[in-house]
Length: 412
Ligand SMILES: *Cc1c(COP(=O)(O)O)cnc(C)c1O
Image (tube, rainbow, N blue to C red; front, side, top):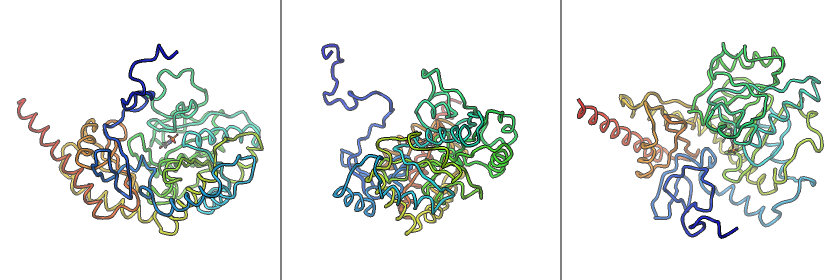
């Protein structure tokens, strides 16, 4: 009843009619172009977050925009009860450029992982004819916010208050080849892995660890699910992060960078998984609409034509080298790590205040866990922009180190 509503709802207080699910920065962006963002006060920012690895081609990239506008004039939506040529085209582009043979389109990362978990279980039930259902995932991993994917996620904070959780998920320590073997049971059907943990703090998997994951999958006939929602679409300097390791997953999930900002997710799999799904076994209303898949086609075509994965690799190496040089000797900085343009600066303590100060200096950057500053520049960032971003980071961290030292001296 309206009389019982809280005062102030929808009366101009930002966020008052929204559930408080996000700790938002006190900035309201109103325009973006390339690497630049502008807020409602007219301030300009250099964007090193890319909407968390989403706008990999920068804001409003012309190639994607033109394709979307053309599609808007043709057809927006038609049910998956009909053929959708853009879906076929994007599926061909994705399978021709990856290990995969078949694609299912959805709308988000969590949904892509749901589809991956479902097909892994159903492949075991319907094709292999066994009763295995357990998925091994890793501590500090992130796989999404639906009930199954938050259960898969190796972080307790996303689970609080949501019990009972679905059964069938086991969490092994990440980058610990020895501990993994004892997690495999006669119920295990799959191992789900981020080749670089993104939300968990920008932590690349070691080659030895990946080799052990693959060995166990082969030994026990387990499916390897690569969660490439953050690492995929060129972010790590290859089109997909698994390419760095010389291995192939059986299933891969994509979302963030796939549509350059238009929502789209995808679950890709090897040919043997085809028979696990049949008409009616999985689906979604909005998965792979003509518009969403137009965004995906334009994104991947642009990436391939302009060799943007290679550019991400070069730019990533450059930025990481610059960060190492400019941050050398800073007592607040533990290490700089990452792969391509997925870069983390691990600090000795919480980085929230550093991130806010960088925003005030005109650099949009985010964290990954409490102690890691995360950089996710777009693939077109110029050397001048890279230098400017690194300069702001180094400047703020030098100031903060001096402040911390001053405080320590004053105490003594
Ligand atoms: C962001 C992310 C997800 C979840 O994607 P949503 O689109 O937010 O549902 C899952 N896995 C990884 C590795 C991610 O980075």
